Amino acid sequence: TFLEVDPTVSFIFLMNKNNKLPEMPKNCIVINEVPYESAPVYFASVDACLLLYETKPWTKWGFYGSSLKLFDYMACAKSVIASNVGQISKVIKDGENGLLTNNNVNDIVEKISFLIKNRDVSTRIGQSAREDVINYYNWERAVQETESVLLNCLK
Image (cartoon, rainbow, N blue to C red; front, side):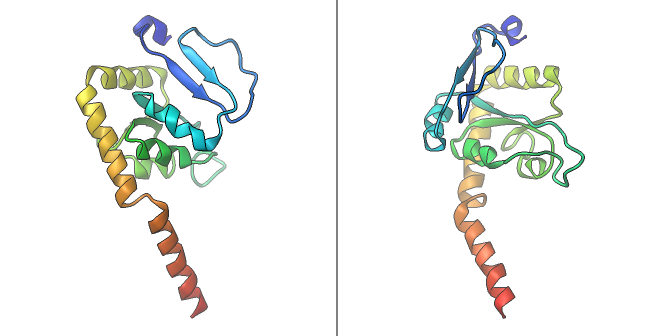
């Protein structure tokens, strides 16, 4: 466990409802019933964010779930360690605006340890992620592209 690697590291789990979880190690903090609009306050309090998905071969995206969290984390200028699946692997440029993992526990531990030991790199990655959200991965651009497609359909 990470307690053996670095007992100073804690993990925060934000839940949108009151979930019954198994007993968690003492370095894990579970916060239940966090409304979506309150999540950025918690994101601001952490050094990095994990976005881990299991591969699901039955979906064309390679995983099942919303990747909105990815953009939330990036917008908060956080280093993200994300599963190398689907469109997530197209957004994250490994080592530039995040770190990709194959979900191997040792790989995740190494990446967390790397970010802890290289705070300047972690900050640079987080800032690069935020710039990508400001400049491209934002609702304004998505709306403009959607509007353009819809207007072309009306012609």
